[in-house]
Structure formats: structure tokens, C-alpha cells
Length: 259
Length: 232
Image 1 (cartoon, rainbow over the protein chains, first blue to last red):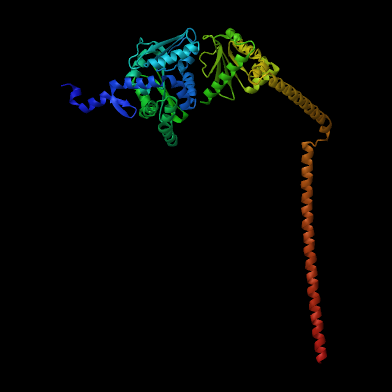
Image 2 (cartoon, rainbow over the protein chains, first blue to last red):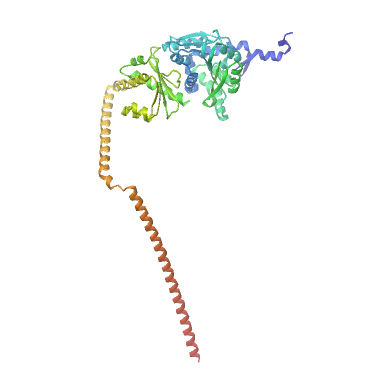
């Protein structure tokens, strides 16, 4: 008898994961997340601006400033979606550098590719459809890996962090920009009200898909808080891990190095 | 995050201005891939201006990244204004008001770019409000400008005149001090005099009271004596 059979309860929790507030089979989560992003891809940028009142642009700028990117660097923008970070990195790494925009979702990748090509950004950008849990790159490839608002949608976050660690060069760094836990209770309550009452309605009106934005709000609450994510990064092998709360902890930028 | 907000605003402003420039963004190609970092004392953090010509849309990126800087200038806003007005670069460096680290040609290139920007505002405004309105607006602004210039000149002339003629009459601080001490002295004397007057008033009232009391006693004694004599 295998160990899994001896402990059916543990076996059950290992096979399941969260999809918002729902508990689903791990094997199903990727396709469920994919359907959410297929649905919202075309309206993704508009919704980001509406939902965050444009502040997401400052959060992304903060991430770029914290990355310490130099000309010639190789950057992986994981779960890069519509390519906001890629566009900026592409200009900063110059002709000698390279940026890989990777996303598991083909619709998001297509929207991102079209947007960046329309901006004339073609020289140093590659597009890869990839799962963060098993990245299709050689070890020690990238100077910087960023994952902005993507980690919470990954089924096995620990596996994804280990995979990122392996593709980073020694001295390279990971930056995780993700929704987190607000520092003050008042902000937390206001944020809860906004997320569960207003946000799905905006989603319904603009993207004609309230359910996807309901999932967004739920997935944010189920995502590990600042300290938990920091220890997850340490467990994956990252050194000098730190985080910085932005907008009162609504979003946090985690940073870790591979030495 | 105010740093990012400032960088974002600057980036939009600079690139919009460059788009309106009559010479276009062609001058940027000479500064391609170069970065100028400015650290202002008032802000306390760096602002880097990097020229990006890779995408064909020549533009300037504004970040707080210092890793790719070709030239770093540490100074203050006051010194920058002074530099623009007086052009005393060497003197300001000697006075430690300006610290330049890296290739000064990069800084000069950016300065030249800023100086070479020329915008035909009338054409730009006319695109939005029409030619007639733009003409009237420009006439009005010209008139306003000439009036303001005249007013500024008048104020300067009046103030110089005032300084030449009226300065002699202006009371100096030593004179004010002397006057104040004299007023204090006078005040002391006045209070001394007041005390003395009060003492004299008190003395007079005491004397008057004593006189009244004495008179009343004498009058009583006289009336008693008269009464006794009548009885007898």
C-alpha cells in the first residue's frame, strides 16, 4: 500500500487547490484560470486602469526601478500578459539585451504581442507560451525575472518559484509584484468592500464578465500574505529576500536574489 | 511611490514637448542609449533621463535607475537656475555647488537638446481652436506681456528711485535702538514722577484730614464751654 493510500485526507489536500474561494482539483485549476484570462484578455488593460485608477502603472514603474536593470540584461517577464513591463524593459535593456514575454495564456500573449508590435517594439522581444511551474529555458539564463499579478494564479507556487530560481543566473533577481494584505484594518475593510461589491460590477459592465472579476477578488484573498510569500521564496532558495508594501499593502513587491 | 509619479509625469511632459518641437525628435539620435542622472538635493533621489531610439519612436525614458548612467550631476534647483542665468559652470563646481561624475559631453548633449527645443505654439493652438481665435489670443497675450513688462520696468524704476532718494530718510536700526532707550528712560522718569505726585497727593489728603479733625474737636470744646456758662 502506498503512503498516499494510508493517508486519504492528506492525499485529498495534496490533490486539491484553491480557485478563488472554491476548492478544485489541481489538474483543473490551470484550465479554469485560462478560461478567466481568455475571457478578459481583450479588455485587460482598460480594466486594469479602471480597477486601480491607473495606479498599476506606478506599481509597475516601481518594479522596474527596483529591478536595477542595465543595458544588455536578459529579462524574463513571466505571466507578462499584455506586456506593460516588457515594453519598458525592452527600452531599458537596449539592442544588446533581450526580454522574453512569457504567459501560459495564448489570448493574453496575443494581445501583448499585438500591442508591443503596434508600439514598434520588435527588436529585442521574444514571446513564449510557458507554464511558470516548468519553464522551458536553460538553467542560469536570465539576469532578472519578474512576475506581476501572476503568481496567485499559479497552481503550485512553490514549484514555480523553484523553476524561476533555476533559470536565473547567479546574481540574478526575482521580483514578484502581487496583491497582498493591507497594513491597516480600515484599508482592509474598504478594500474588501471595493473588491467584492464594486469590482465585479465594473467587470460586468466593461468586460461583460462579472464572474472573472469575482474570481480576481477571491484569488487575492487566498494569496499568501507578505511574510508567507517571503518565506516561500526563501524555501525555494532565494537569498536576501525582502518586500516593500505599496499603497498601504494593497500590493507588495517581493525581491530575492540567486547567489 | 511619489518618485514614480514624478518620473511618469516628467516622461509624459518631455516626450509631448519633443513631439511638438519643430526640429522633431531627430536630435535624440545623437544621444542614443545615453543616460543623464540628476540628483537634486531638494528631492534626495536620482532621476535618470535615458534616450531610447530602438523602437523608431525616439523618446526619453525617465526612471530612478542609476545603473546605466553615463553622467551623474549632483546639485540643487537653485544652482541649476543660477547655472542657466549666469553660465558660471567652473565657479559653481569650485564652490561645490555642482558635482559632475562621468562624461560631461552627455550632460552638454542633453543641455543642447533642451536649448534647441522650439515650439510653434500658434500652429499647435490653431489646430484646436482655429486660426481666428488663435490670432486674437496671440494679440491678447502680446498686449498682456507688453503691459506686464512695462509694469515690471516701472516697479523696478520706482524702487530704484525710492532707494536713492528715500534711503537717506529711512531710520537706521541704531537710531531706533537709541529712540527706544530714550523712550524707556522717559518712561522711567514718568513713573517716578507719578509716584512722587501720588505721595504728595496722599500727604495733602492726610494733612487736610488732620486739619478737619482738629477743627471739629475745637468746635466741640467751644460749644460745651458755652453751654456750661449758659447754665451757670
